[in-house]
Image (cartoon, rainbow, N blue to C red; front, top):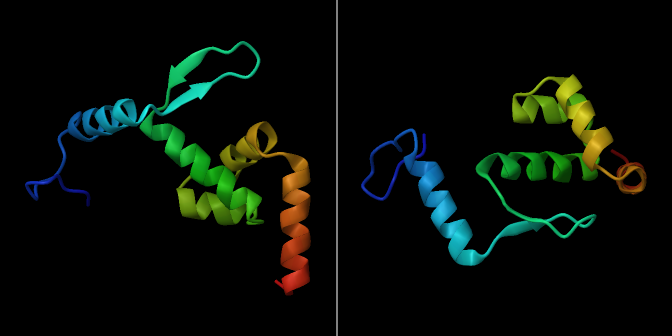
Length: 100
């Protein structure tokens, strides 16, 4: 369980508010490459980024689904949408090279 600096559980909005404060101070944004639009990143974006990193590392949809507590179908959708197929092929080749 995550706790705040006072050692008590975060409130419903406390963690998100703290995350947003740090995000804004650090200037973390997403820039859409098609139109240059700038939008703020959110906590849920971190989970999606972690998911894509696991997929690019060569884990299967089922392995990532277990880690993320998502369905394999959700992970498959993220793979199709966000993971470059060539990166997956390189990661699989690396796993084969290592004998995994």
